[in-house]
Length: 188
Image (cartoon, rainbow, N blue to C red; front, side):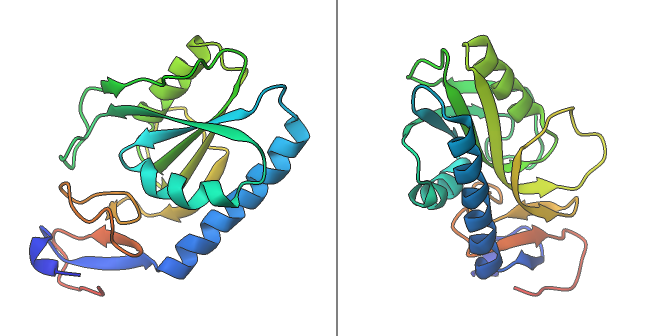
């Protein structure tokens, strides 16, 4: 990793093997749960762009039930490190009416974005909205939002890799990294 493009020192929180194992566990749980639900129509996997694309790409081949794929693009961050007002860029193209929707996102941080996307799916008539996030940030003051499927927990630090960016870069980092703006210790 070229550390010169990072705004500060970093440390690795979860290596690629741990991330891949977490994704497999999420897939196993989803396979069991969807078999029990037996939806009348195929579920819709709804990738939350842009961060959710890596999780979606790695999770879908592990799912053993029929599904359709669509996406939603709503952001509070853009390339910034601090969230602002939710901005809708793209809404799903498929009808959600009466469907089981599985939201796939990179991180549950403050929960504002996921909460609003979940509400949108319910307003569009989804019979059930399940949420799968690769990373759950352990922080105070989250919205009252829940992810049924969580890959890994991380401390309340700015994290990137596996779909999460650092100032628009490093979504492709092989692992989950934390940015430490005032730290002098670097593990990556």
